[in-house]
Length: 453
Image 1 (cartoon, rainbow, N blue to C red):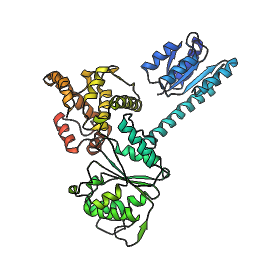
Image 2: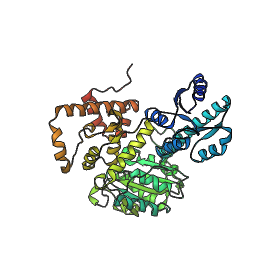
Image 3: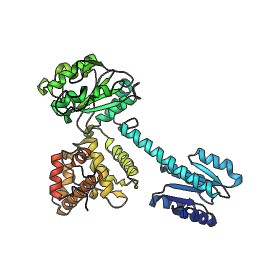
Image 4: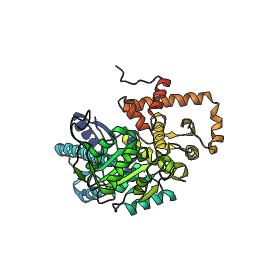
């Protein structure tokens, strides 16, 4: 059921709206002035607003301006008298969805409301799709190291040069890939990702180059490989340092010549593909076992993503960004970090980098009661730096805090299992956690691994 807020200083208008919309199965909230409306908005999830322009005290323009400042994204439909059409048009320019003229026409009222809600939903879906594909995925960071990364992306994106991205797990290498692809002349063509660490060595060749029907046991139909899928676009070879030597040799030939053969075929296929590779290993060291000729072929343009512990000033920025993003996705009100919480988290060395920070924000948003997140709300963090030792020492022997930490972790993990339909592999991937580690947590906390009947 959608919730609609009516803001009008005339009780008769509010009553008319309430009768019409309640009959149409809307949940109706009302406010007789601007300050009351802002209070209602702060305490409720509202899907649409009808706003009178002429009100004593805080008028409709001021209310609309406040909505914009608070970044509310629901459609606002302005109500105006016959002589206020120019005023209503001005409100639309400020961001209102549409306006209705008094006296109100029931059919137009309902149609405008329906269209406004649908329009907002379409915009949200489009933005979510763009975020998912990376075309609008932001790489957050203002420190000097991240400014260098942004400059690199701007310089290399328009080219077709091969790029190698290095950095620890969780630093956002995939976001750099998406940003480069989005800024290239290939952006309207596919961005195809291959997780080299997740493919069994015996299937790498088939995964990358495809195979013909009957070319090996289990090849029941022809398969198009990732290189062909990415033709005209970008091929992202993630965790390439974990690729087998045999596969490395075949990738080297394909990268150098832009041609390959499907498994079980002698037909040479040509593709136009830009290669971007990523790794958390130092491939320049021959002792890693990585082919040095392939390394040099990939290392045309290279960028290193700094770990979060070296990004001075970015922790607070990321905390605020993810709190806003996740709260919007969950359709709940964002919570504010206290200064003590900020300072404590800035001292953490973040072994899981940005992925760890994001997961923590989501956990705190779900499990923390109230509107603020304080030091006591933050679970004990592992792999702490020496800077944190003095801060954490007061908690280390606190049995109550450790119990709270375990209870919070259990609730959070159970929530993520349910969110991923109890798929343990997918849940572990989303959490950036080893599957074996998640199994240990499931056993430790006796978590449900299937829906309750």
